Image (cartoon, rainbow, N blue to C red):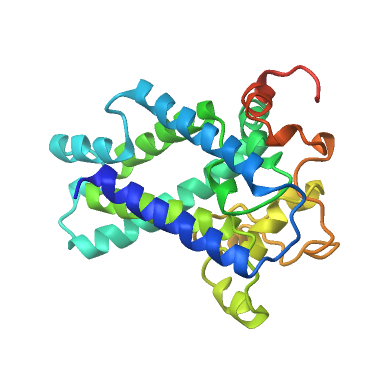
Length: 263
């Protein structure tokens, strides 16, 4: 099975699994029907995938293969067993994504792009793919740069990319986990309840819980918030200046970073 087919199969499986589970065990009542939002998110995904073709061969996995052939990057200077390299590469890449997420909130230029993700007023499995195409391109270039620096094996990057996508679908899901299960899981990984806090309209909550895979980064760097101030059932999701039906529309979402004033 090709790398692309493998990733698409696992991605589709994760979307099906968690969208089914959230339909059976919803955490919050929806504001909008699935159909409109999902069509918008599908459109953003398709456009983002086409946008990545602009980069041609510049993908994180292709970069890892190229760096290995040239002997570039820290791991290419070592002779560690593959399992150690995969483990360490996963940890470093996950921390890099955590830092990238913080930068996307702190730097105004990047926030203009990233807020497309945050304008979603419902949160479910499909929200994991709601990223502006330009942000997707910049994110790939960022990952390529990190891969060049650390020089991980291509299989390590593949494993990381697959788990990153699946975990994003999981922690964006509108899924109600038993309190005891959530309490144990969030000691290690980001759960839906933990990540939902990050999508609150309250700025102090929006700027918390930046992790995607491991929850340890937020705890270590004091960006962790256990629960939203108003509770999960009554909290407002999205951005305070965009509390309308607009974020459910494809064209509005695509042109948002270029709008001079809130719409």
